[in-house]
Amino acid sequence: MSAEIINGRELADELRERMKEDVEQLSEQGIVPNLTVIIVGEDPASLSYVRGKKRASHKIGIHSDLIELPETTSHQELLHLIQQLNSNDEVHGILVQLPLPAHINEDEVIETISPDKDVDGFHPISIGRMMAQKDTFLPCTPLGILTMLDEKNIDIEGKHAVVLGRSRIVGKPIGQMLLNRNATVTYCHSRTKDLADVLRQADILIVAIGKPAFITGEHVKKGAVVIDVGINRLEDGTLTGDVDFESASEQAAYITPVPKGVGPMTITMLLQNTIKAAKLKNQ
Ligand code: GUN
Image (cartoon, rainbow, N blue to C red; front, side, top):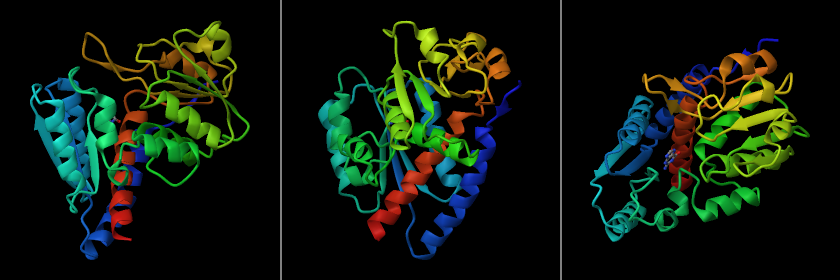
């Protein structure tokens, strides 16, 4: 079997075209969705991500400001800036790029962002609402993954979903969101015993551990859906996922590539959440 490739780039482009119309309609009512992104420090990969977020916003008519702060910014200065943005009526969405420098308390930063502007879906109130299955901002990468599964009409209910990785940004929320859709969910991580055996039970395998080609065909059940969230830059500069694409696609029914897989969907969901924030503010 050779798997069908789920092309996140194409799907993201289609969705962004639809969003552009949404944004045009809002601007006819005098509402321009506004996303403010904050980055602290000069990590080149993070800078490249946030500039990509700004570019993607502008392309569909969302106003986006990027605030680049020096590495030496204090915890209090960052909290103060977030509080100002919280009370600025023109700002609909606030995103603080992670990771933050070690001297800044990440949890406190996330908790300072108003839940009404939490387009990342990382605030404990957003997470609690997600767990309670209330309408809320859902984190962008997991939401992008669910959107890909839905667009391909892949059934989730009753399926065994195995999530490898337990980060705040991807692993934990995607497991909860799949559970909310009636999947049977197993979380795996660095301490999981008999990992390969568990992985081979997956109907839907989500891999988010940041280790190049960690998953190979021998971990994949025939006919499984494999979602590769890894973005690893090799020494020669090429991007590669956490899954060995060639051997895994021999086993899987569906697979996402890297690049052009989950990555473009993440930014697309950020745009979607920003539009949602603008609509909520003005409803
Ligand atoms: N760093 C890596 N991914 C993300 C993300 O989705 N949101 C934020 N805020 N920081 C990140």
